[in-house]
Amino acid sequence: MNLLSALAILPYVLLSLGAPQRNQEAANDNVPAVVSTPAPEGFKILNINISGENCNDESTSFSISPEGNVKVLLDNYYAGYGTEMPRHFNHNQCTITLGARVPRGYSFGLKSIENSGSLRLDGEVFSSQETTYSFQGSDAKATAKTGLQGYIQQTLYTNRDVFETGSTVTSPCGVDFAVLKIQNDLIVNSTVPGFRSGFVYTWEVNVSDFFWKTCE
Image (tube, rainbow, N blue to C red):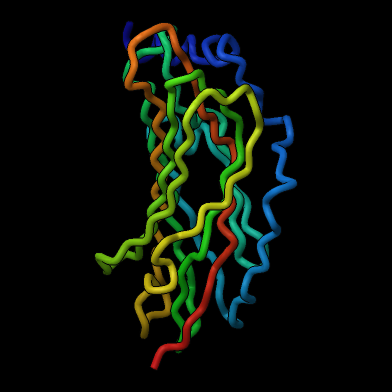
C-alpha cells in the first residue's frame, strides 16, 4: 500500500478503531485552569508556522488571542497501531514555530502545554506523547512527556504536561524578536505481537502558560 492509499483509508481506519471526532468536547474536569503570568507590555506573537506529516497548513488552523495565547487545531494528527494500519503510522511529529516580539529587558519560556483529543489502547499497547521546546540560537531544551499503557477504553482526554526544566530554558536576553520552536512526537506501539490495536488522536494544542524573567 502506498502513502496516498494509506491516507485515503485513514478516516475509515480511525472509525473502525472507535476514534471520536474533533467536534466532541474532551473531558477536562481534572485539569486545573492555567493561571498565566501576564505578559509585559509590548509582547506579541507576530507569526506562526506549523509543519510535519499530517500536520501542515492544509490540515491545521490556529488563533492568537490579544494576550498572546495560541490555540492550534489539527484535523489529521494521530498515531495508531493495529493490523488495519500501515506500520509507519505508529509515529507522527508536529512542529509549531512561533515568532514573538519581546520587550527589551525580558526573556520568556513555557511552564506547560495542553493537548486535547481522543484515545483508545488495547492491553499491551502503549502510547507516548513528548513535547520539546527550544529557542532559535540556543541549544537548551525543555521536555514534557506523557506515557500511557493499555487497556484504556475509548475516551476523550485533556493533558497538561509540565516541562521538566522549563524554568531554565528562556529566550535570549537583549533581543526584541525571539523564535520559539515546539516539537511534539506521538507514538503508539506494542511490544507483544497479536491482534491488538490503539490510537491517540490529538486535535487541539494550547500554548498559553508562559513565564517571564527580567534580564540583568
